[in-house]
Length: 471
Ligand SMILES: NC(=O)C1=CN([C@@H]2O[C@H](COP(=O)(O)OP(=O)(O)OC[C@H]3O[C@@H](n4cnc5c(N)ncnc54)[C@H](O)[C@@H]3O)[C@@H](O)[C@H]2O)C=CC1
Ligand SMILES: O=C(O)[C@H]1O[C@H](OP(=O)(O)OP(=O)(O)OC[C@H]2O[C@@H](n3ccc(=O)[nH]c3=O)[C@H](O)[C@@H]2O)[C@H](O)[C@@H](O)[C@@H]1O
Image (tube, rainbow, N blue to C red; front, side, top):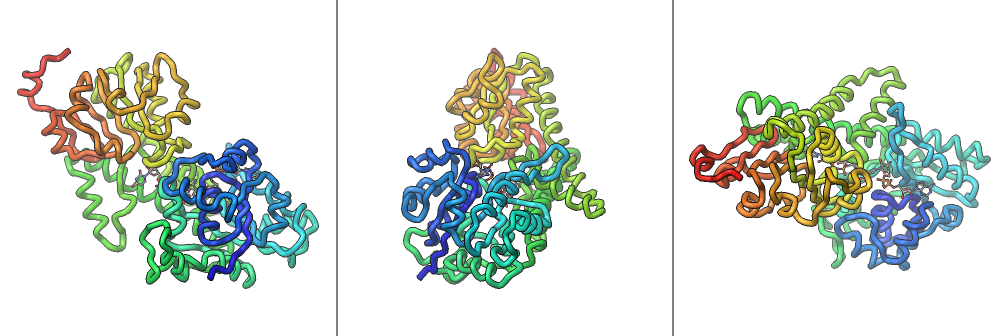
């Protein structure tokens, strides 16, 4: 039997909405608050603002039962035992995290509080934010005994957010009081005691009743550092393999083989060793900058982080140069673009490397025809349709009569394309693949010029060219 906790989640973005729905799925009573009235209206009326697997089903299951949507933070504060803050913490001009949204929420909580509350940092924040939250509460006249502050960072990935949330590698709870640690323990109990995984309609994932989720209790500062250090480490792994990929290209080695060989070492592991067009998204770039700032503030020169960022930025330029090298000149060339989102399975284009590369191509005077299974509408807000860029509904229309096709996002749909159809659709069968979705040997067999990342390029044979009458 779940011991219900009444929870307010502030922010209905990727993290807030997924957390709120998952807390309802775990049996708690949730009020999800956002100050964006349109979004709240949409959520109340059955809309789903983000592309995330399992989210529509869970929303249907819990809407107006376990979860309600509201714009009233004061009321939600009074009705809840625990308030999770999941608003944005974007990068400011000087690199550090802009915590003004967090501060605004804390001030509102302080103005509304009427009994003991646990305030939880769910947003990614720099170390000592927990201390600042306490100070803001006190400045508003709330006594320390009336609240606790906990850091409970979120590790979900977009695209697999619901399943990540309900099947986490770990739950980190940075609590400085026993009462608040116990309350957080109660919230996550169904997944730490395994009872959730016994349920018939439980969201599937790797955890089972016998191997439930692990909860790690730390100090608030440690929890804050764990979040930044985790993202920085993952970004470092990507920049590392991108550098190895560049070396592989220079010596005719295959980075896929190399990554497999490295990843089989249990101390390294196989994940996050896919080279590509550089990492993007709303988190790695901003969290790396924020972590670097945190280190700087403490007088620590964490040079490695700057190098990770530099490698990432150069990787995008390297890939653009590959496109140029494959096409010789770019002005007026018609290029099919597959992928706009920062990675597959999401409609999120924030800090998408695809958009950076599109910008470079447009700057060179290319004519682009782009397709993405979910992110097109968002991309149109950045690059509105014009004589230079059009958006189409399927990959083959994008390829039709194009001088080359460029793959920028790792959607499974792009890995499953009919290569014969694609070859016929393109004016020249040239693919520059920033996500290594195809086996070069197969591409050779299918008569493509195929350039990928960290692997030898392949070119159709002379006989094939001789038999093909070029348009
Ligand atoms: N997107 C992701 O995959 C992950 C994000 N995070 C962190 O979680 C935090 C939130 O990220 P996202 O969900 O991506 O942000 P988001 O930008 O998608 O959503 C933030 C939401 O907060 C709302 N909001 C802002 N101020 C508010 C206020 N005063 N009252 C009520 N609502 C308010 C906004 O209207 C928006 O709906 C960030 O710190 C991020 O670094 C952590 C793990 C994963
Ligand atoms: O703090 C956050 O917001 C989240 O940031 C990342 O999640 P996310 O940004 O959703 O996506 P990832 O799957 O980590 O991918 C990030 C970027 O790295 C790229 N990537 C990833 C893996 C890889 O091997 N190679 C690679 O280039 C992706 O294409 C994407 O552009 C982390 O993986 C989450 O644990 C974390 O909670």
